[in-house]
Image (cartoon, rainbow, N blue to C red; front, side, top):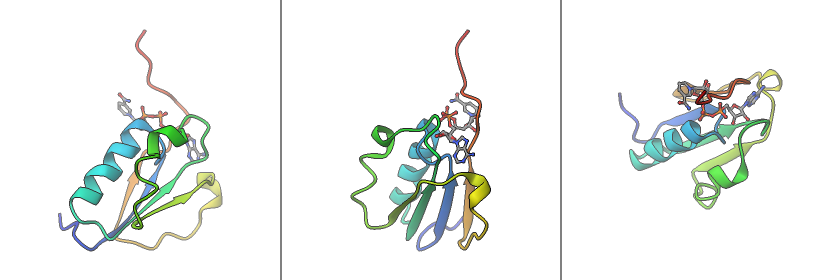
Length: 86
Ligand SMILES: NC(=O)c1ccc[n+]([C@@H]2O[C@H](COP(=O)([O-])OP(=O)(O)OC[C@H]3O[C@@H](n4cnc5c(N)ncnc54)[C@H](O)[C@@H]3O)[C@@H](O)[C@H]2O)c1
């Protein structure tokens, strides 16, 4: 998959996996990575290292409020269920 120069949306972008996906896309040369998260489970700490990158844009929104997606790919990680070790 060609990543260089492309734009991506990651729902649940402030999660553990979302931030790692953002790291990987940026390292592979993505031109834009938009992180969408309502912060019910995600956190600013998880994405603090990303916010200084001019290619990263944070949208603190609910999935249901996001109607228009323009880009080359979507990482759909937004979820209301947190994985737990039991
Ligand atoms: N952690 C794991 O081992 C694991 C394994 C398999 C799959 N997953 C899936 O990967 C994804 C990320 O998991 P994780 O463990 O990194 O963190 P997580 O479960 O905390 O991630 C969910 C993220 O989605 C956000 N979110 C929830 N509802 C939202 C809404 N309506 N609008 C916008 N954002 C919303 C939360 O704030 C959070 O940042 C989840 O979908 C999870 O089910 C995780």
